[in-house]
Length: 112
Image 1: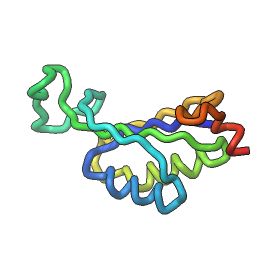
Image 2: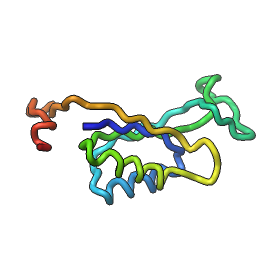
Image 3: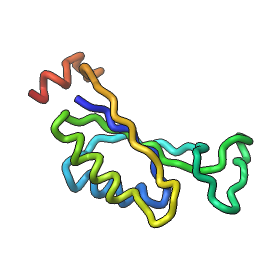
Image 4: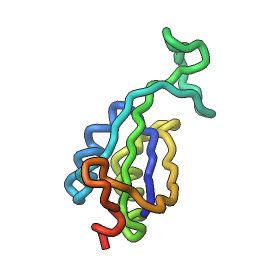
């Protein structure tokens, strides 16, 4: 299994989530945050909460089967990109297993 973590612009999150959902990815975590990166837009200013951040971001996380990872990444890229620099980044991590808290059962075994 793969964990896909994407940091995308807030104005692209709805479109990206809808596209992922339409492709069958129903379970994901969405978090709002602030970040700093290599790209600095003209007129950016430090956050009111943190003096080092200057960019609102949405963190999107989901876990999928290995064979679904490329399609997931393609969907995020297609729906998350804009004509301007600084669209975000995607990380991919291996997931050995996952367990449902309610039942204690392995999700990996259920997906086989």
